[in-house]
Amino acid sequence: MNSNREDFFTFVGQTSDESLALEIVGGKGAKLFGPDGTTYLDFISGICVSNLGHGDPDILQAIEQQNLRYLHPIVYGEGVFSPQVQYAKKLVASLDESLDNVYYTNSGSEAIEAAMKIAKKYTGRRKLVACHNAYHGSTQGALSLSGDPRAKAGYGPLLPDIVHVTYNDFDDLAQITEDTAAFFVEPIQGAGGVILPEKGYLQRVRARCTETNTLLVLDEIQTGFGRTGSLFAHQALGIVPDMLILAKALGGGLPLGAVITAKKVLSCIQRDPPLGHISTFGGHPLSCAAGMALFDKLQHSTILSELPAKAQFLCANLKHPVIKELRGMGMLYGVIFNSQAFAYKVLKKLLEKGVISIGFLSEPNGLRISPPLNISHEELKWGIDRFLEAIEEVS
Image (tube, rainbow, N blue to C red; front, side):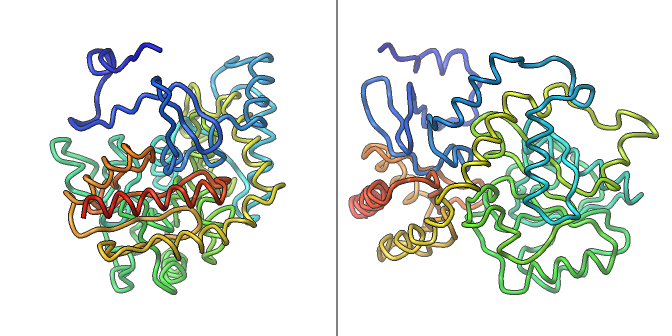
């Protein structure tokens, strides 16, 4: 099979000077295939997108059936499409009763942008609070919320009236005040290197937002759909947000994002002016059909109940003296080393051995492990063994 590598660098816009340029021609389960017959173990799920791996028959069947019906009849919000309606109904049924309305978007960044507008319109306030080392997207507003100054270099001025606090710092929560429209926070910081909340932190966040009538916006773009062991991370962590942001796995491998909140909150964008937030392709019927197939499978299979044993196995076996820290839960982990150079060498060595990993935006010394949730025990063991081999060889 002919390679597209040269044309990739010639005609396709690049995101960095050091692209992995990983060419894929097929996939099945936790495996991906290159044009030369190389088989890779997918240890990142497309960054928490392909939670059921590749080529899942139920997702493919849902896509095929919807594809035969219709794709894009009319702009989002002006048509009644079964995949949108039924998926929203299922999502709401799985959440706290206060989260009863779904607004669909194309992506996580767009969902964050919508949430920023909704928060300001609903509360009448302008100040937003987010966390250092957070990542909420690359569009102008989402980037303004994100907490890594390196990602913002050259793109200013960004949005004003945004305050950044330190994740897990209880005292810093005093910066959430009666002037704050919303606090945007990840239950687990993903791009920061999989940083878990300290005991009681999210409960204090919830209490502070309630005290100040501030909307708590929980970004579960990476942690949703079983990634951390429960259907949504906040459910196991014991809090309820005012707005829930979803994307990545939401579309079952296709582009889809969503803001889920109370109808009384979401309705503020319907009037004064009407069409206060619109999206041509938001909630595309094909994406909703695919996502609903993934969601149904997670709810009606043993995949989530099998995750604790897989997580325990990973944590018990991925050990090496040069690993500074292994942090995470479910099937979302950060493997932290002492230097960026060492992490990058391990990354390249892993690829040579047929394992796909990737680094973090705000944790240069780390590598990500977030395989498909239904990865087999044998595949997980094989991937861990290759990880240890790569570390040993680089050491």
